Image (cartoon, rainbow, N blue to C red; front, side, top):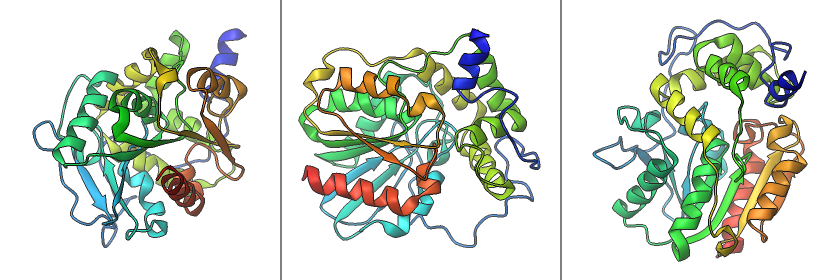
Length: 303
């Protein structure tokens, strides 16, 4: 019973509602996902050497680095782009190793490597000070970057993040999470649970396509190990940059419940919280106008 409760809390049980959807080949587009006629990303830069693939949006004086989740790359953020202010801000969307514009970049997929990659790319782009946005898995990465970047970091905004205490998964949960990588039905259950089963087949087809096309299988497995075995420790109370955690009311309990809030409040006494009532785990896809507004409000407030 306890094992089933853990799986249910992570949205991984077989009883989670799921709508029927066609299968997607891992890492392949297929006829079900025709490419868009034009890309919303101007001049994306693929990974080179130890520099992550990335794309700049805007030419404003304030710079914001944006990271992605486990089941998605930069594409998750596309619905947000029309609502950002390119005159006031420069947004640098980065893909971690094995994902999106960094797909050809292999590695060990550890927390330290991800942090080093982001900071190295920031240096290569001659960014002196910056704001940081993380989502889910990269919320853990963003927390460690925040502690290492020091005064360079101006603010941290985290959407549905893994808390500093980590994502502790037992053997059964790890088996279920690995199934998400290999099986569309398992991935569909996880995605559906994280949005309270409120959307239809079109939504699930789109999100599954993003998940399957986002990265290599090796990267997914590597980062799964990372976020289920890593915690944030050390001088977390010394974080000077303001941190804001945004959760979706329709997400699974792990990403919105009291334990998450307590974990953040204990590690970062100055953290603030916000709930999006009409979103689950994928708020940038579900409520893009609200997400853009939250990000820019945090940037403006932090200076």
